[in-house]
Amino acid sequence: MKKKFYFGRVKSRKISKTKENNFKYFLKKNDINKLNLKKKVLLEIGIGMGENLIYLSKKNVKKNIIGVDPFKNGMLNVSDYCINNDIRNIYLYPFVFQKFINKFKKLRFNIIYILFPDPWPKKRHHKRRIVNELFLKKILKILKKNGKVYFSTDNHQYFEYVKTILKKNTKIKIKQINKIVTIKTKYYLKAEKKGNKINSLMFSSY
Ligand SMILES: C[S@@+](CC[C@H](N)C(=O)[O-])C[C@H]1O[C@@H](n2cnc3c(N)ncnc32)[C@H](O)[C@@H]1O
Image (cartoon, protein in one colour):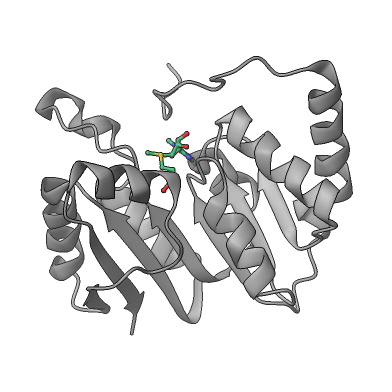
């Protein structure tokens, strides 16, 4: 049986035929297979509505920015923004990350962002969490030399769990970050509104 990697909604609002077609056009034009590999590549896993991806694209015009998420409304939000604002360095993959790394085996990244992954707070749902030991092993493998990963969450238990796994590996440098790692995404703002503490880590391999 095929392993399930996604437990959320793929769509939260109805998508018009025009938006669907624009998205298809965008994917064809900004094909990940045709990426200029001489440029630096930033990756965000779980882009949500894409606020960080858009921010990164403007701050790093000479770098490639890839966003991976099966959530279609977020993907369309970004592709519409790129089409309307002539943004050319964003590439989108509208499926799960697990599929992405199997498909693009040779891609290597300078920075990877994992911001507020679904926390699945109930113990019986912990196995649904995207970040686990195997996931961390995989993302460390796809980092370039001196590449780094940013991870933020407002779920204390999730944060401690990730830190514990990382600390088991002596070849990983970990730094706890006490300020915001990028802009305030939708889930950053949600956490802030609830008064939750936001914890962030930056890690990389030696
Ligand atoms: C809680 S939201 C956070 C969104 C955004 N990073 C933010 O800070 O606002 C988690 C996101 O991860 C996405 N996601 C869940 N499982 C995923 C997977 N296996 N691969 C890629 N994205 C995934 C969801 O669709 C959702 O958009």
